[in-house]
Image 1: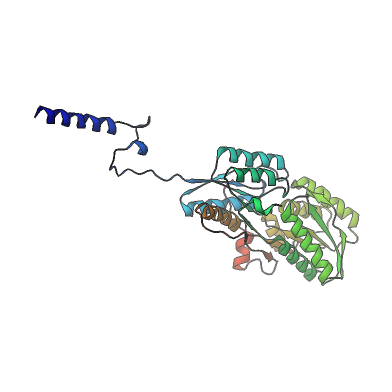
Image 2: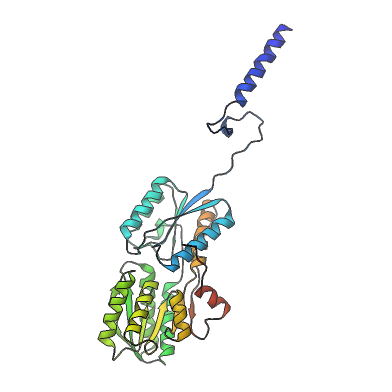
Length: 342
C-alpha cells in the first residue's frame, strides 16, 4: 500500500511539473505540451516582401492595393511593402532587397529599376533559399527568378503606334520621349512604338526619339518643353512612355499653347490623363492593369511557396483608352484602378 501511494504521488508531481512549463507571456509552448494535448501551433503567416520601382506615383498605389487584396484572400500571407521614393534609385532598391534577404522573408516580389543591376542581389536572395517573382519590368537573367508577371510592354508600344497613326490619318511628324536606360518595361514600349511605325506606317516620320528623362516630373517637363520649342512648327504628335513623362508633357503642351493641336498618346493612367481624354487634349492612353499585376505577383509567389508549379511568364493585359471608349466598363475600370490609401 505504501509503495502504491508513493508511486501515485510521484506521478502527480510529474504531471504538475509538465503542465507548469510555459513561455514568459504565460502561454503554453506547444513544443513543451504534455503528451496527448490538443493544443496545436498556429501556422505562421508567410511574409512576402513587395518592392515597387518607386512609391510616389499612382500606379504603385494600385499595385499595392492588388498585392494586399491577394494577401487578404489567401489569409496566410502578410505583405511587407517597401520601396524607394524615386524610380531611379537603383542603389536604394538593391539595399532594400538585400535587407529583406538578410531578414529572411519567405519570398520577394520585385519590380526591378534596372534589369542588369538587380541580377546579383536577386541571385544572392535565391542562394539564401528566398525566391523572387519579378513584376512590371523584367530582369536580364531569367534563371534568377521564379516568374515574371507583367504587361506585354512591346505590345503596348505597338498599340500606341497604331493609335497615333489612327489620329494622324497615317501621316505626320512625331516625337517620342524616352525613359532612363536600363528599365526593360519602358524600353520595350519604345521599341514596339518605333518598330511598328517603321513597318506599318511609312507616312509617319519620327522627328526625335533620343531624348531621355527620369521619373522626375519637373525634368520630364523641361525635356518636353525643349523638344516642343525645337520642333513646334513641325510636330504633329507626341508619345510618352510612363506616368511622370505624361504629366510633364501635358504641362509643356499647355504652356506652349499646343494642347489639342498636337496629338498626344500616353502610357499609363492618372487623373490628368482622364481629364485629357474628356477634353480631347489626350488622344489615347495605353493602359496596364496595376491592381491585377500586384494581385497576381503575390498569388504566384504564394503558389510557388506551396510547391505548386507556376508559369514563367504571366501577362496581366493591355488596353487603349480613347475619348470614344473611355466610359466602356473594362476601359473605365483600368483607367481608374483602385488604390491603396496613401
